Image (cartoon, rainbow, N blue to C red):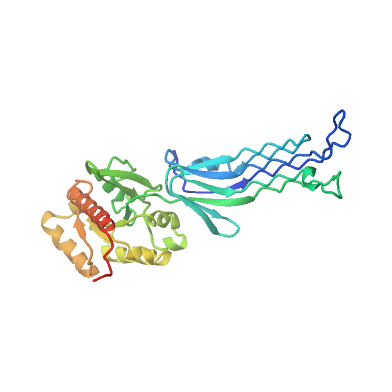
Length: 348
């Protein structure tokens, strides 16, 4: 199935049913009076997160969603039936934005979570509500109100613990293949992943985390170049970033310059991303003679003045990839332990 992470749809809630103007007409009851019932409320449009979905591709074929109209009121004080709601299933991690106002309506981050995106109209009042001591035969009634109608933008942001940063051909897809059961496409020529994919890294019982192989980044991505914001959108939810760098690029590009270029794109898109924990993973060590690998890696780290953890790996040979995963697992365990600790008391 083709991965689609953005769609625009139109939703329309059902209108409320009209109230009824009716009078009681029964034998032996000459002054029956008004008995018109109210109209039913219109159905609303809801969105529900479904973990069984992983793409917005269905919205390429259906873009309009409409809830049922409420039934009109009837005589004998019979109220109209309310319209049925329409529930739109979307993947977990979907952000819903009002196209006209650019306002984020909601963010569905858990399976089964529901969000009201268009409220149904209220049913009109029947003439039974307008009777009084001076108006014993009212003919007034009200129509139902229209349901809400709007255009919505759906954005799918992957829910992953770890996101892989890096230029195209840095080896991200090969790395995620080496550490998980995910099988993104790889090639032996300069090639970038076109669609994000998730992999679960399992190190033991109750020891696992989700890693996202995200499309490669190029300069100008924050301004829409290449896959642009489609890439950066998926980084926003991750707790830890692994910055993969080709230690021996075939075009003699400086790895330090590549790291700086990606940092600039992160800063343009969202400066907070630079404050997120980010580790350096120098990949493709197998492309260098064994006696030169450490020297080249240390030179890159020195020129970057890198203070965070860093690793020298070969994703293709699966050399040192387990060490990276074990360090990531310890990182999350320490985070959980810190979150579980009670806050320090302010009393001496």
